Amino acid sequence: MKRKKTAIITAVLLLMVSAGIYFYYGIIFKEARNIESEAPDFSITAKKLLEDYNVDPKKADSLYLNKTIEITGQVTKETDSAIILENTVFCLFKEKLKVKLMDNKTTIKGKCIGYDELFMEVKIDQCSIK
Image (tube, rainbow, N blue to C red):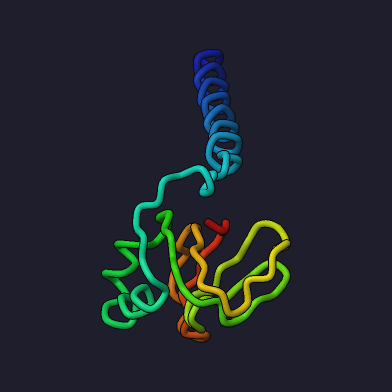
């Protein structure tokens, strides 16, 4: 009887360790999406994107959040690895920008990560210039 309990406890512990390893490597270290190679789900202007978030944030999130989108607009602010389109869409790049885009109309492709109420900006991550 004692051997049977020990065998069951050992089997359960092995199962739990196996599940933990699967979770750790299978979910936590899942390969990141390559946004640059994905086709955009939406092509939209920076003003329209902000308007959609201002009108109905939940609906806009259901449409754009974690989706690959192309945004077109005038570059109004630029740093070494980010730009702002139309003072409303913050676009973060993986690498430093090599081209100056200030005051140019530009199309950016990236992943929408939501609306920042504090700065009143839509945030786009993993951006690339189209």
